[in-house]
Image (tube, rainbow, N blue to C red; front, side, top):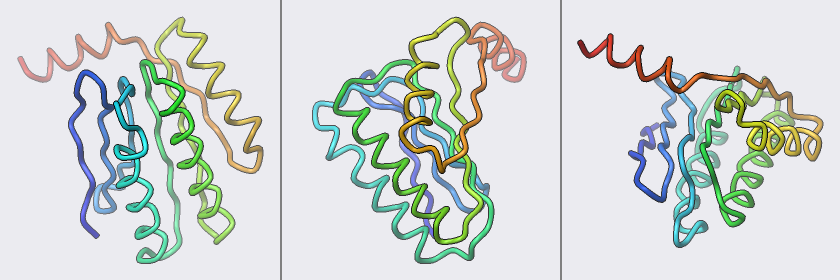
Length: 140
C-alpha cells in the first residue's frame, strides 16, 4: 500500500501514513481553506488500509499546534474510522501529543476521548524547545 505523506504548510499539517514503517502521524497547524478537500485523501487512505491490511496493532498519533473548527470535524471523522478498525478486530490506540503547557490542546484531546470512549487515548506532553535542540544535534 502506498504511503500518504504531505509536508506541512502555513495552513495544513504534516501527514505521514505509512504501512511499511508503521507510522501514522498528523501534526502541526490545520487551518486549510477547504478542510474537506484536505482531509479526504486521509480518510480514503484509512478506508483502503482497512480493506488491504491484515489485522494488527495501530497507534495513530495527533500532534497539533492549532486547528480550526472545520479541521476538528475532520479529526473526529478520522477518530470514527479508527473506531471502526477497532470494531473490526484491530488493536487501535490514539497518541494525543500536546506541547508543554498547551492545556487547550490537551483538553481538546480529552474531549475527543470522552466522545469516543471505546477508543483508548494516550496523552503525552512534549517540549518543543527540546525537540528543536535534538533535531539540531542530529543535523549537526
